Structures are given as C-alpha cells and as structure tokens.
Image (cartoon, rainbow, N blue to C red; front, side, top):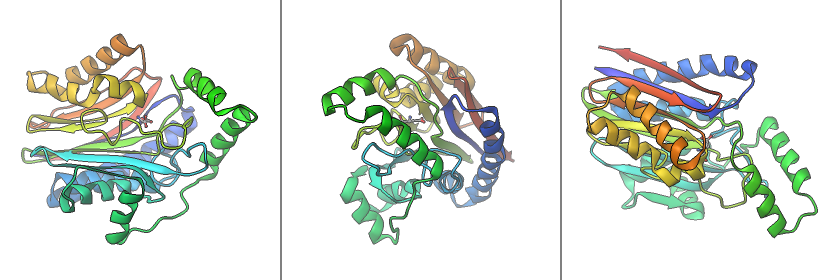
Length: 291
Ligand code: ASP
C-alpha cells in the first residue's frame, strides 16, 4: 500500500489563509504519492519541498525570522529502520528537509547545526538564498518595535510571556510504501524567537519520530512539544495497539494535561491507517493514497 499524510502547521490563522493553504497541501500530498516509488523518505522530501517553496507556510521561503533578522531553518527526517537525520539553525537554505535527508544518508551523524550544517549543505550543491518573505518581515518588524529600547533581560521577560501561543505554519509528512515508513518535519521556528532558538522540529522524538510500527510529525508550541517528546509518545501508543487517530488524540491530550499548551500531530501506521489531532484553533492537513 502507498499512502502519505501531510500537515501545514497547527495554530490560529485567518480563514483566507486556511483556504489559500489547502490546495498547496493537496499538491504536496500528490507530489509525495508520486515520489513514493523511490521510497517513503523521498515521498516525505518531495511533499515537504513543495511546502518549503511556498510562502504560505512557516518553512523554507517565508519561514519565521529570528530577532536578529536571520532565517535559520530546523528540519528532521526518520524512517522505520530508525535511520534519521536533521539540521538545526541552518541559515538560508530553503529545502532544509533535503539537507536533513542527506545528513541521514551521507553523514556519520544524526544532527548538524549552524555553520557546520551550512558547510555540509554547500558540499551537496545547496546555496543560501533570500528567504525573508514580506509577511515574515512584517511580523519581525512588529516584534522589533515591541522590544525596542528594552535590555536583553527585559526582552527575555517579554518573550517568556509571549511564547505560549502564536499562529504557525510548520510543515510535516508521514509516508508509507509497502510496510516501510518515513516521517519528516521542517520549520522556520516561531515568530517570537531569540537568535539561536531551537524548537522541537529537528529533535528526533519531539517533532519527528518513526519506527517499524508508525510515524508521526508534530507542530505547535515547540518548547512544550519537547517537554513531552510528543512524536515519540504518539508512535508508542501505536506500538501498544492504538489506531493512529486514537494515538494522535492521546498525544495531544497528554501535551495539554502536562504542559497546558497547544499543538497538533499527524500519524500513520504500517497498515496505512492515519490520524490527525490538534488542540489549536486549526491545523491543515491532506492525505493521498493508492493500492
Ligand atoms: N513547532 C514549531 C517550533 O516550535 C513551530 C510550529 O509548529 O509552527 O519551532
């Protein structure tokens, strides 16, 4: 069986934005399904690349900008053989998920960060580009105005109050090809971010997890997703026999109970059952499958 589920982030966005994102999510799912012949990792990559290229999502072009004006991307990918790779704070490379996949396939490591990740990406032909979209720049200016004149410590205090909830648009996918699974997630981070901030997305077990039973990709308040290792928990519920829908709902309930926070998650099991759950206002997602 061939199947892919993709998400475009959990959060609160306008109905217009939600409508604009829908066809792009569907296109991403279709592209993922087409790429599945080459393996579930390729499908996850192909689907996420489409969302990274679109300025409607908080990943690749249009990703959130850190307070110093830089776009630093986080992404990770994992498959059912427990092979995994990720990039942390990768500056200026739009298709961060592709670099994460190369880290998995070509490097001796699981995670590369910052300048080291950039050096690695350049070796494989990637080059930094301008990723700051007008929409992301407008959000950055709003924050910079709010923090203007505050000391670093005062900025920290203000950001701590703010960090609980904002509209998002992180992207992720989980794909299945005849019992083999892969899951991946890619993001620009949050819209109120200190330079150097790292969220859940590149962290295996938090934003992304996959094993022979199932795969999951999370989105939402990254600091809180890390605290409960959301993606791993959802896959653990699947291992214990839960349907992915129940597993996703239990994962979100766990996060809400333990951290009082908001997130969304998608999941797929080795039989092709899928699930999606969120406790934010909305989460966009799409599914494509063929026998
Ligand atoms: N989880 C992402 C992060 O914290 C944000 C999101 O899902 O939109 O970096």
